[in-house]
Amino acid sequence: MSATVSLARGLKRWLANTEEDLRVACGRITRPFAADRSADRPELFEERPLDGDGRRLDERYGDFPLQCVSPGDGHYMHSFFDVPPVSVSGRFLLLSRIPFIWRLPLPGDSAELCVVDLENRSFRVVYRSQGWGMQLGINAHWHPASDDIIYCNDLIDGEGRAVVIDLAERTHRQLDGPLYAVGADGRHVYGPSLTRINHSQDGYGVPLPSRRSLQVPAGLSRDDGIWRTDVATGRRELLVSIHDLAAGLPDRERLRTAVTTLFHLKLNAAGDRFFQVMRHTGLPDRPFAVRSRLLGLDV
Image (cartoon, rainbow, N blue to C red; front, top):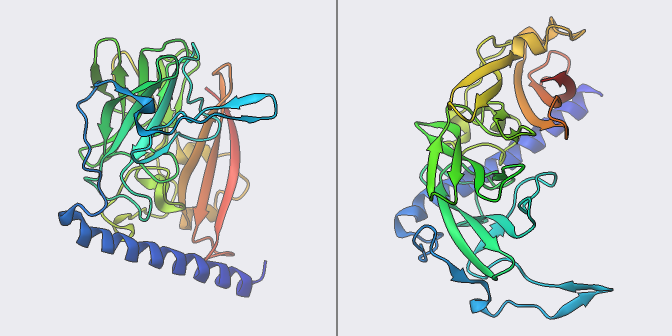
């Protein structure tokens, strides 16, 4: 790729980021007036009828009946396309209700974790989180074998960390590490840093005061990488560092002057292998571009 094309793409990305910064700045102005927040804040675990807003559908798509299964009182989304929003029994649907869709969230903006009962056609708000983004919502996951346990993210002491919610006990518990994927048996959660993940693309981590506040040093970090957190104890461990991930790469010497961050992490069905997307900016040959690569690893 020519330097001219690389510069043009970098400029386009910079302009897009500038537009988003303006939106966030406007959001700071409107926040004291609650111009983009929902006034309806139900009590946690309060059950409400799903059909009270008149959104029941009586339509068909070929041989399949269609039903509206999200409330009509806000903006609802589930997580990434490969994260099942329906519980293991098929009865419950997991959704994030976000307070606005016109700008990125700031620290202090809360989204709500909602559980829809598809059998009783009711829904509950079960948790409020400040750790959400426009791409994944609260990034909520069901336990692989339970209708009662949910994992999601929150912004805790300025850091994106996982939370475990017990619907039966109506309790939640904070973990030390970030959540991007849940192990096949539900005993561990895995993820890269949820603050640094937004360095190359917004919407996948947790809110930051501003884009300019995200400072990621160049080089291959020995202290950051893929974290594995034990759900029972809540303790995290650095499964593999960015430095070690890059150790076998043919261009690792070139990466020493670039900024390297981790993006998507996905586990296989057995939970014994995963892939990790690694991204680089500031490369000597492509200083204005984002270069991505896919790494496969054993757990």
